Image (cartoon, rainbow, N blue to C red):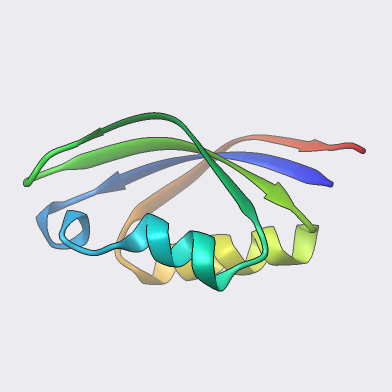
Length: 79
């Protein structure tokens, strides 16, 4: 199983959407919210995604299509 940490930042339009809910529903990844600060104008979240490499790649690619700024901070492959 692979683990990836992502920093997400979102503007006003994106924080109104249920992006994290869709992420957990549409992709076969475990979503761990390690830190977050979200209000009506701006949002920041540090996520850990765990799962098959292909699903993490698909989930990350989808996040990038939502207008959220996505930055990978850490990758780990392990059992």
